[in-house]
Image (cartoon, rainbow over all chains, first blue to last red; front, side, top):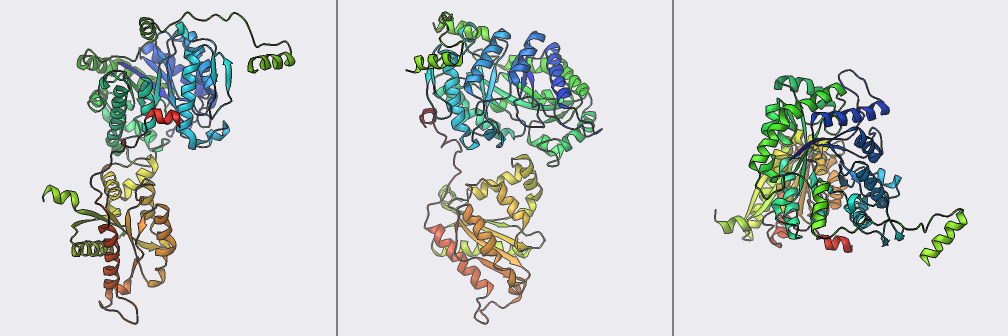
Amino acid sequence: MQFGIFTVGDVTTDPTNGTTPNDTERVRSMLTIARHADEAGLDVFATGEHHNPPFVPSSPTTMLGYLAGVTKNITLSTSTTLITTNDPVKIAEDYAMLQVISDGRMDLMMGRGNTGPVYPWFGKDIREGINLAVENYALLRRLWTEDVVDWEGRFRTPLQGFTSTPRPLDGVPPFVWHGSIRSPEIAEQAAYYGDGFFHNNIFWPMSHTRQMVRYYRQRYEHHGHGPADTAIVGLGGQVFMRRNSQDAVREFRPYFDEAPVYGHGPSLEDFSAQTPLTVGSPQQVIDRYGKMREDVGHYQRQLFLMDHAGLPLKTVLEQIDILAEDVVPVLRREAEAARPAHVPSDPPSHAQRVAAARAEGRIAEQVVAAADHWTGRTAEDDVDAADAVTR
Amino acid sequence: MTKEHAVTARRIVALSAGLSRPSSTRMLAERLGQAAVAALGDQGVDAELEVVELRDVAHPVVDAMLTGFATGELADVIEKVTNADAVVAVTPVFTASYAGLFKSFVDVLDKDALAGTPVLLGATGGTARHSLALDHALRPLFAYLRADVATTAVFAATDDWAASGHATGGEAALGERITRAGRELARTVAAREPRGEADDPFASAPSFESLLGG
């Protein structure tokens, strides 16, 4: 089972001292956090994608590309990549590039984005969110699996004779998760393709998460990818730990009370009872998260939100250490001991996907482009080339 | 209670947004609900009434507005309202409209929660001069929610509670208006099949083939 962290990349004032990092400081803190998570031995670092303040991670593959170069083992991922407002062609290119650069040490999670105003900034409409996710992802898959794509749809200009480069590493596209909080359509999409399903989980009662995951598992089996209990599931989580639980509560409360999303709402105690938020000792976190599989079945990835609400960088790094040293080894051991042999322990790695594709005879030799049909020396040449292909 | 009874008894939920205790708003909600149950009984239709005071879930309503999800007792109330065969909705009139708590509760309901549900409206206030709040505030709100709202809505002013049970000066007494409103709601409810158990929220989820085709 994989354990890691995911970040929203929010710029939030530290309520205990009134200081606010600027965008540069916040981006750098995210890089430090990711490197620290790698050194501490966590399995996954995932960044969100946002295009409005107070969030800084607008360009995930730039960040993850750098991290691929300075980290050793950690899997780099997203939480989420906006399948609605990004051009699927650019997603295909950017993440294939990241896959090559990281030598397959990456995957990505599709999400729709829930900020209405962002859609029109990219020429889209939030009311078409589901349809955008369906059409764009169908195209993205073709761009990764077919060398030359002719395509026409509702939301983007048609493609004729298009080849997305670089071609995926070893001819096998990255593993994809689909994240959704309450849309059964997205659980259905993940199940249809046999992709992973991730439930953010952190702002929601477990009863809700359980329902969504159960639906995804049923549909995964329905679509013929294997028994429901072998579907690939990930969950979010949120914790704050100190050796003594009272210290954790005392230190975290001001951040909770002022936090974006739920601040000034329910009490820390109520929210902890209603959602997976756990503020206390490492043992309390172990007890709570060790039980998650009772609700959602054996799952493959658990990500924690650790660096939000204005928590200082130093504190976040301490939290990562506590997680990696005191919590993850126990949770991993317990999960492994409880897991039936036929259930995968991890989401499929690049090497496993390549081996599976070879076994099924799905990998052709990587196409080497023999000629350039496109690049002209002048704009007029380009027009001629375009005419030649579309004629 | 036999299983047959459990399946066919109509469930009427009476909501009161009254803030005080005891509350005349709750009293009106209860009496409207009882009138509907009695009128259904006259037609041989079994019905159960549950009165819910929104005051008891006031804090969770605000929490739900901030967090985006309802929990615990509030989640139960929302489920009951969503799956009710009929809803009686009664609010005090504050500052020319429904009480803020009343609207906040409606705001945390799903927009389709009351679609097609028979609803009986009621309001309370100091004087009958507030009574049009029923028609200029509550009725449009429930029209937006696509509820099936009874033509008669009942307003109870302070005077009404003290007045005699009979019509005076051409105006029907509160008790008579309640009975008439209860009968109206009962007619709508009796004409329908019982709602039965809650729908599976995933039952209507589209297959991916249809999503791709659409």
